[in-house]
Image (cartoon, rainbow, N blue to C red; front, side):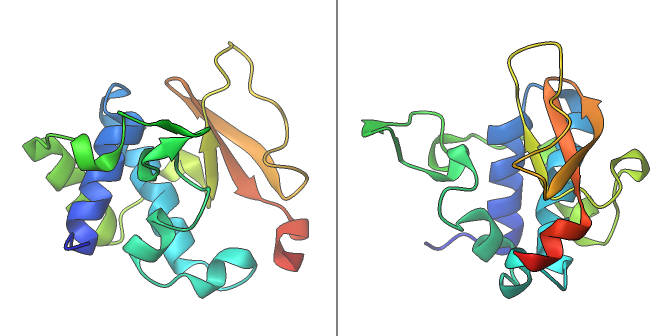
Length: 144
């Protein structure tokens, strides 16, 4: 794939959080960059934005098929706007949302409640932004 890290980040921002407002998009960008920069646990081996985004089974928007069916909402189908580029540049410059902590995961529970742990005991709930719940690593994450 010919995308630069910047373009891949802008595309995942649009795809995963394009309807979540500026803070929602910044939160997703922060999670990606937190994974790029974490020095321990399973994500420590992924050193670039593209490696993080295209790690298997991590971001639905990076998958062309889901459940054996074509996934029309993927990063390849995104039409980027300036805000997506701006937020990607903001995150790559080292900025993060302060209320997000060191979140490494997010998901949309499709309900008003966020579960306390995600994806298991390795992440604990920190904040909800828009439709997404965000999770910081616990001590158990270090053993992944």
